[in-house]
Image (cartoon, rainbow, N blue to C red; front, top):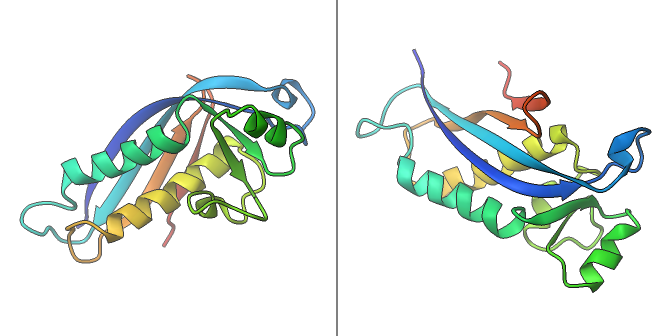
Length: 157
């Protein structure tokens, strides 16, 4: 038997994937939805993780670093232009990452798949700092960039 809890949050962020052909080469925005699931084999004090603190940590990180900004690959020629204009920017695959951009190490472009993995790393860091059940871990992250396009990062046995 296992127990799970899932936190949902939405955010508005632009991105582009210039290394792909098609319309995603263009800078465009989405109303993203993230669902982060934590699984535990047993409960601690009746919970998997303290819900309020976990929600606050995830939502604060997303709102601070992604919401109403742009996600770009560090090698995207638009990255220095947007940064130079003072725009909110989160870079994937940066050689000189900020402390928060280190969560995107090894992820070169802000595809929906990469955003799911990024948020799994952010959630795992938050989980380590909170009261939680023994063995609790981030097991599933689903990110939807539109009503019909989504990707998931999943722990497999």
